[in-house]
Image (cartoon, rainbow, N blue to C red; front, side, top):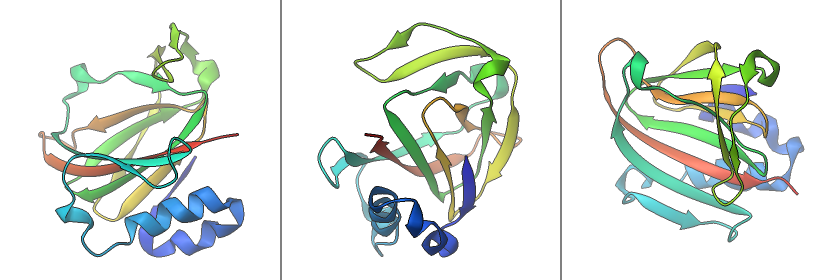
Length: 149
């Protein structure tokens, strides 16, 4: 897992070209003007999902993990808490290969994501996105899916 501010994104260029492309996408000046939906950067290998939602209260959260894609989750507006934890601390669920998602149960830790912050979650890293910081908040987030092959 990596968590940082977009201003420091250049530090991660050595990890690979797809992460570099993903961070470049987030630096576009009109990012907040993009409509909700999918934006292909490199087809199914790298694409962005723009989302606007109300952050969830604790009882509404679900732990999840992926196998084929890493998530780069960027908070463009609002604030949220992101749950994260090691896979061995969770009871496994059923993996849905069509959606590349598995829901799990267990306990993890939480980090605060404010505007301009991002988190990279590698395949197998359990996370609970979209959680409220205190009261629910309106959030604009860009999730970039990075295929790991």
